[in-house]
Length: 387
Length: 232
Image (cartoon, rainbow over all chains, first blue to last red; front, top):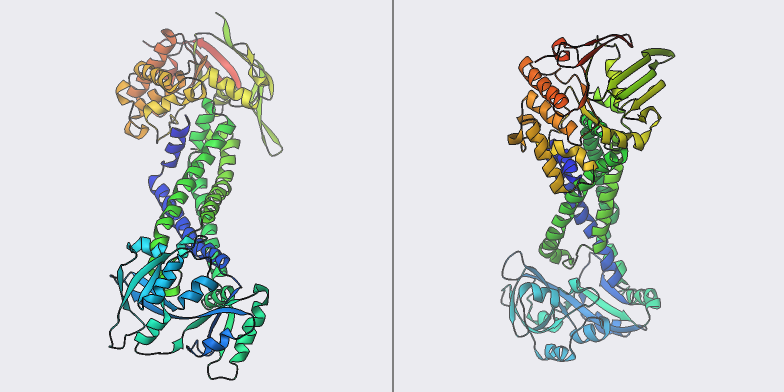
């Protein structure tokens, strides 16, 4: 600790350069946090998705499918339960508060398809009794301060009511949670029948069917059977597991993981050179000072350590600020943009911060070691005459 | 008086490719405790090399260097570093202060290598600042001080750990006459009133006149020794 003023002084010897380096490191780790947050956050999403649930959508241009498919799907061997799903994308109070209300079969949803979602049985009954009743995810309830009995008016962006109005009124009859991944408890779950009857267009059409299979090992067989069932109809289906469905959806945006890793890699690689350059310059212009310190009696090891601590402080503080900024911005960004793509529950996993800390340490070590070794090996006589 | 520095048959050469460039040739020297010695000579005569050898900054190729009873030509690495920290105070021509540290922090540097507490270090620093007459400049950074003041800080830093030897390499080489006289007067006080043994390399005869003994060097050998006309 007693050497810290020396480290601090060296760090601020060239204030402008230090600030530029800090800003660069902050930006780099902010990007790292944001991009890896998406990357590893999606991995965590895949972990809660499963192959025991299938998603069927219209094969041609993702067209909506007729409600009549529902009964036929239920009759396919290996199918345990099926729910229709049709979304109402709306805003709550402010244009930035985008809320996704999913019209579903509430009984099938909680009892058979997503039994791991926690909700009291009486709420299912309440939903069945209340035509415009909804259950809301705990994450959204916490965010908007919703309670059971509240009415939530949504200004729909994609579905109009019979009278041409975009205003939908839902009554909250319960709150559900997803204990394994509470951040994903964000949706509003409504009765499909209510939405279907009240909407102006698209009556008796379904955006998606979600099927629970008896045996996850047979999911491929069941998916094929469903698609074959409608192979000769005008409304062919494309059925895949929930995991594959989300992967395919994301793949339409390109290989996200590859892209994000590439960007993060390039940013960190550039950062490495930038920090190394800063430290090399910093040590080079301090050669006479370092030689003077050696003359005074500072050992080779102390000088090695002070230069290394200097770069570790730089990368640690700036990297921490960058990761901290991403921790603040990422949830806000996901809350704003997430509902449009169904990713509002995406959060930066803890391992991104741990990984970020490790990378900051590695950047510090790789960029700081050569100049630190130079300081350590400095010949005093040569150093003193080098001004 | 007891010799504190004794050099016997010291040789130093630099290797330039296949050529051996001799710098010091079979040099013998004895410096008594409490002496103020001025080393003079033209550029390239070897005086700074001799100073570096005495201060343990460089290694000789042959001969013995005995400082205060320690054969420093036998010391290497961390042992030599530790010895230097304890026994040598070095005053540089260009001060070599850390620009981002205050005067007090610069002076404190050698004490960081000791086991003194922060409070004890601060007490020593205050005393050293008072000794060089810069108590009111403790919080100033080197860039806010004149050349003469910076050199005083350099001297305070060299003295703070109470070294056996004060080694000065052209301490007034970068100063105007008035500042140089102030610095030399301070060195003289340290020698006369505090009994510090001082070895000073200088080109300046007026500076050398402050010393109690002058040695002249040429081509790696001591060629003249005389007692100085001691400046007032």
